[in-house]
Image (cartoon, rainbow, N blue to C red; front, side):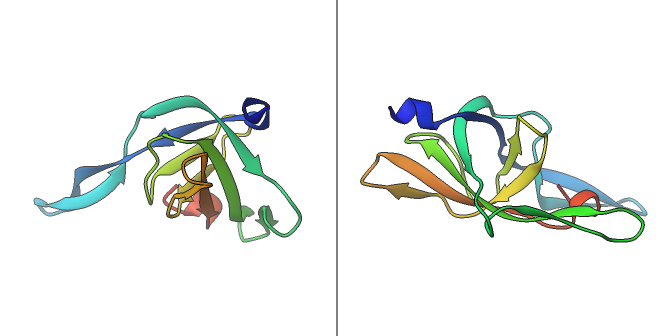
Length: 123
């Protein structure tokens, strides 16, 4: 029953410590960056899509962007952390994860996902 509810798939990328070259030979090693490969691939999940709680297209110059927030349900025990990047396997959109919350003891996990700035953002 609950497995049928998980009708989508997502990839989860954890943050890793990295260095950033700011130029002139200066490097900063205290930066958290999204990993280049997904730690969890093709994870069964459910993206809640209801009116008022979904991604909206905003017309900007010179291109439009996809902004908004959405809820994600995951089975209990999935390793998702605050600020992880979650990629929807269905459409390729990437979101930033909020604080994961367990529901009904340890039945499943709900996470608020955020997307800002579309192509111009860090995602």
